[in-house]
Image (cartoon, rainbow, N blue to C red; front, top):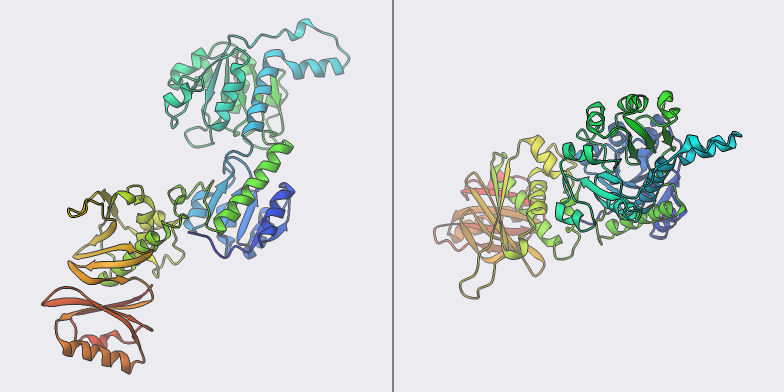
Length: 526
């Protein structure tokens, strides 16, 4: 699904100059406007096809709904906490980030924070600059043989583990998604959180901010940690409960904390910021020249590749579509949409449930995007006028469509090969199609197989009638009287009632004229 029509992009924050340069070199007009208020952004966004942000711009539902032609939101950095992904998905807008752009920078800052906590480096520097020489006050501890608990073992968590192992630290962790055997390969055995907390001398978090991670480290967590545990958050503000952290610092249960991110930025919890055992930075995780260059370059290249149909890397709300840009995949997506449209035309009203049967070894991993494609065909032209592959599943759910998808491998007894096709079953209708020579074709309709596969493109008239030459003549006369030309004609193999499909130059203005000649008729434009 190459995304056409992206001609103008707004960059609303300070992004590396290479981002604008790459976009412009590929024929995209770029406008840079920084420090806009929400109201200014809402007014400005109307004329843009794309938006590039970092972390300061809040792309809320109000902003997204104000956009009239927005097709992509690019976050030049890791995470998309500042983007309402659900609202974007509902409008069919692709949201993407640069997952690897600031990995090294964020990992290095985390490691620096751990070192600073162990030796109180910032406090000692401030004391000396204030004219003091107090060596005893800043007694530190070695990192060697200490245990570091890492919550979130993705790119950044992994890099932190590898670096801190070089200090002789023992690394343990937890991640609900990444398998334990994967993390053990880079030296981090996993355990449940309730078992992890009591083992840790230091804890660092590297997760997105989700309902399940908000306040993950709280009063209860601190109560089961070692007395004097030190915590680091260079990920997202709110993962560590700030009020609970201040209480733990004041009681000594927490021996030190290092925060680069806060619930409110700039932070308003003055007592926490000024606590003597607190080290804090103004959200500097990605603030290196290298990270900014990488993120700016990555988001620009990702957008250009998406427009050109090369890849869909970094899309956070369209993971199932990452393989849809492959040349061999595109005709299958077109087939899914076409079969959905044929099904809707035959049914009139969309009464589920719908069953999608995906057949053939080559389509074993295609169920996700084929389901989305069929939904697009079913709902296109309804009230869901902005439906596309990005929002198809959401629109289906909101429209009450229940689609059950299953995959089967069937082998032709004659040649032993697996036949690739997809079939939509709904109510009394059964529509089967495949791709022949890169062209989507209809193989069968309601149990009737066609003598020759029917190309699913252009304007089609489908009708069911008795095998009778006079019927064909009558249909031709009606089309001719309406100024409609016949471009192709196919019939099913039935001997009694059979389906016929005509490729026509334009749709018949009054389909009821056929009723006295045929049993059933529908037409559609593909």
